[in-house]
Image 1 (cartoon, one colour):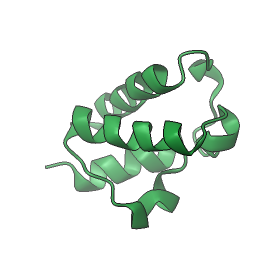
Image 2 (tube, helix red, strand yellow):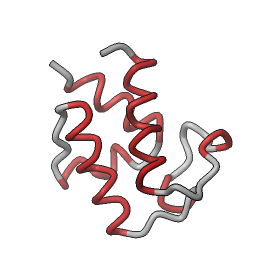
Image 3 (cartoon, one colour):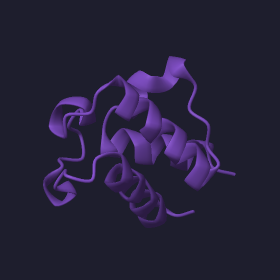
Image 4 (cartoon, one colour):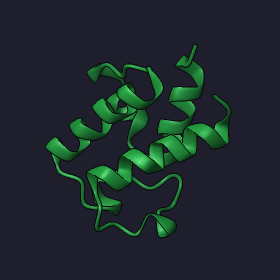
Length: 81
C-alpha cells in the first residue's frame, strides 16, 4: 500500500466509526479523540477497523503513536507487509 491508499483506508474506517464527523477538516496532526470526539470505544473500533482493512495490528502500547491521521498513516506504512 502506498501513502495515499493508506490515508484513504484510514479515512474510510474513520467514516464508519464517526459517520457524523466532517473528515475534510481534520488536521493531519490533530488528536482524533478530541478533533472528532472519539470516545475509548470509538478509538478501539478505529484500531480494529484499521487492522481489518490494512492487515496491520496496532498493539495497545502503540496507541499514543496513532492518535492522529498522520500518525495512523505513518504507523500503517511502517508495518504494512
